[in-house]
Image (cartoon, rainbow, N blue to C red):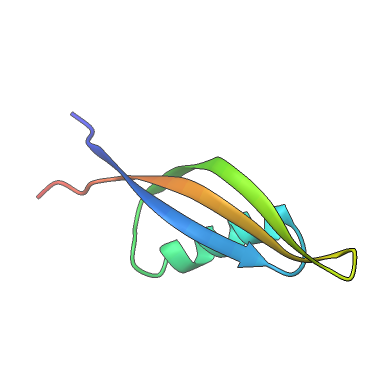
Length: 68
């Protein structure tokens, strides 16, 4: 039987939403194994002088729990 766990992570990027999600995956993979999916729950941008300054993503990362 497969057991999955979900954690909520906030990520950001000055480039794009896609890059913010990739940053979440890269940072999560440093301590989490068996990442199965990322559900983007919320997105927002920071604006400065009428230009997008930063992309932010609130996401849920799903990964498999290793059995002994």
